Image 1 (tube, rainbow, N blue to C red):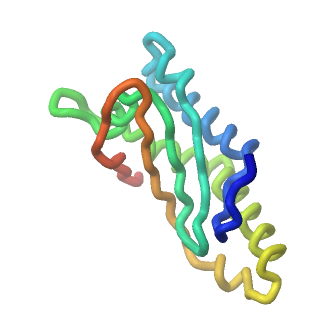
Image 2 (cartoon, rainbow, N blue to C red):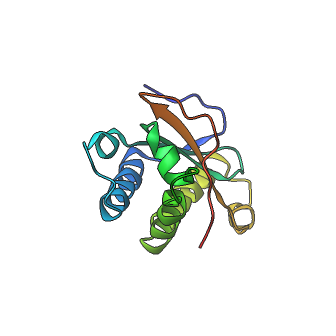
Length: 143
């Protein structure tokens, strides 16, 4: 399936898969594997809309949201914050922005890509629950 040509950079599959593997490792390190349904359900979509922030959509079992955000009876595991820290430490975020820079330079050679990309960009997480409901936004507290 081809993506629409709407000025949005879609992160390459190999890199999205790397993000999913990183999140799976974090889930395993936090001992959040019970039936492996959460671990096996992790999928990632990622894109950068025209000159926007990196948007990472996490598709996973609905209780990922509760584990990330916490509940009245459970402290949050801050999975998004840990994922962001790990992506930065392992160079995955830099890899994404390198791909984006190359894509921009090919698409818009007249633009000064370096000036545009020199601004610090942030990551925005969205969540698509599987197998249940979770309607709150994912909380993201940086370390």
